[in-house]
Image: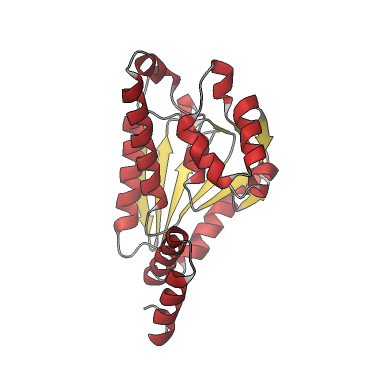
Length: 241
């Protein structure tokens, strides 16, 4: 079985990271997740970068955690598995904490761990025929690694139904719950994502990074004060340069 590959390119203010484990539906193991997070951080670190476009290769955005890893997890002590879940959440948190936005097309299946990855991106754009599901209940598993993220992002009744039923929802539901920024025709989702990434990349990196920092600080503080401070500073300077 071929290992996932991650490729990074840059053009002007736009960096592109391609994650390719298409043969496994872009399923993840921890080494693959570390590889992706490191590539995204490296792409965002360049001072000339305003936006990172994430491309998930193949037909599916992410089919979840790789089932070939389940036997190892099932034979490990429960606390070791819990630690792995914590580590994975911290890795996803590093994506959300990037200083520039990550834009991505969401097509095909978004399942299990893929829901957590989706929830940590900044500007995901869904294909009309994309679907989302948490099928863990079918296998007798509690999706703890995704559950707390889902409960923060999705109305509780909808989150509970997803987790307890394993039901599949469509892209319109993802948009309604705020998990994606927009829904586009399936044949045009890549072009729409590219246009969005290029539009964001038209803005100077300093402006984009200031807005990203103010956004995260405002959400963390639960107050508008960081946004007031960032806006005032940019106005006094005559704009972020």
